[in-house]
Length: 297
Image 1: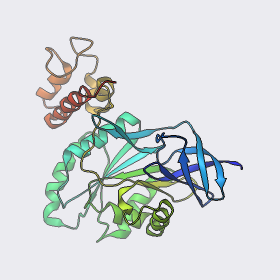
Image 2 (image 1 turned 45 degrees about the vertical axis):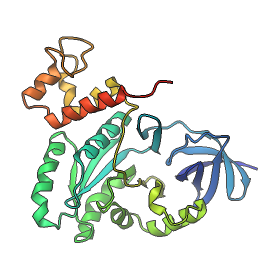
Image 3 (image 1 turned 90 degrees about the horizontal axis):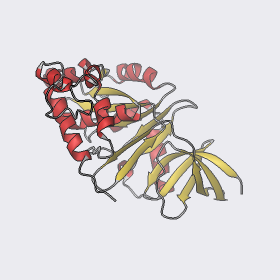
Image 4 (image 1 turned 30 degrees about the vertical axis):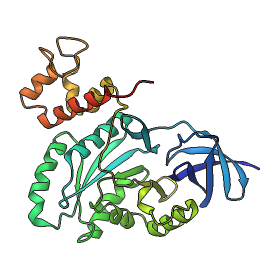
């Protein structure tokens, strides 16, 4: 049977769902390999009208993943931008936001932050205050209220999505699903189709899925997670993923400075001088520590 180039729109275990010209194709990998990500373009050898075997993965423009000490989890391939969804309530973790920003920077993906539920006015000043750190770093912060001002929300975000492949991430409870259902017509129906095709039962929120809005535009919904490990990033990748470190890199006394406790370190001087936020340097310190914990093979 013919070979097809298919876009992977969902993954569940080692079962993948591909889409080509609106048709869904159930795909499996050869052997135990499961290094395919949602957003990948793959060559599939058809074994029946709606089933096939993945033969190869096309070269990726970008690849986002998170990792702990033992394994890494692919989030999505070929995305151009990341939207981190936070809200005035329930509380969101700055640690998760900053880790997501670092992951985006390291992967060459443009990050945006969405502050949802701005209609909860009594909590808005505090949330805005927490957003100033990210705004000061140059990250766009978009204030929306999916529930109270859906039309305004669509007007703000729809132009940003056009022609891009965007991944939405965030903790559960931030309104990410409502946001995606509003931005992607038919998302709920598509999710039901995907669940049925992958035979995942009712747990539709536990897997990443891609919605093709048009030929050039796609939206990827990633499940809510409570932690975002970055054990795969080397120290060199980490220092470059903190955008505010850039003006100071290469100006330390030691060329191989770790920016942790060395004398005459330009980064530490910037922390002391107030141009780098202590909370951000503390995260850098934590990530360097985590990266050194990986299990060697």
